[in-house]
Length: 288
Image (cartoon, rainbow, N blue to C red; front, side, top):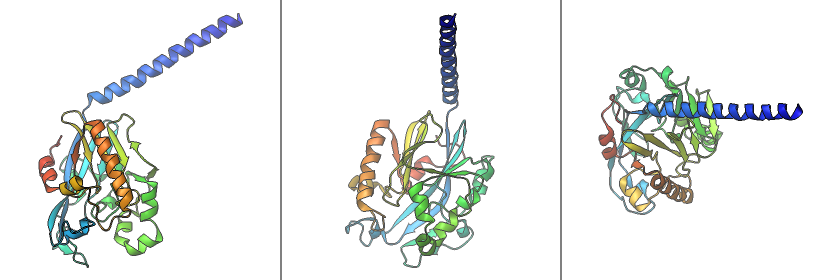
């Protein structure tokens, strides 16, 4: 009798496991049936007046260049994630602003609420916010997304909330100080657990800098650089800005990034590249 009970329990366990596995597979398959949608919004324009600071040598000496500053929204069956948040919304309806040292002249035309509205969404519809890093040109609309869960590398969180940064770069801290739903991560993070949207740790530009892999059904995978690279030339020659947190760490992250991109067969999108911006634009229609 005891053997029969044990056998029956074993059979039931196997059946239950198979049922759970089938349900899990059904969920994965169902998610695959709904293609991801990617929208790109305008986070402003950065006129770089002193391009020389974007290399350790004199490669860009006495040059200037205009950078795009895009915001990306990815719609997944399990939720909406916003990647990067552009320049400060205080710039809207203002004249272009030049930073005190003269390195950058920045401007912004539209806020995140207005641009989300164009596709029928509000900030409350954003489930997750992930910033490549917390510099002023990537966190400007973050304060509008207090209902979202902020996915941030623990190193980056500690960096931007440190007393030193609150004093030296108060605007960077102010952009994220009201975010209360925080998910701290360490390393790579599969946002929805299905490999379609993966945050990849690429520290160096800042202590917790990260890049974003998005596997789009229609056009194939994209790999968003954050500020690992600022220009096509930066990627070609592995040039590191003079203001990066850690040069050696940046170079290591470049190697990690390139191997990941090759492994996934991903198209690399340099986020400050006007060319890449123009290729993916215009919103509000889903770009991919």
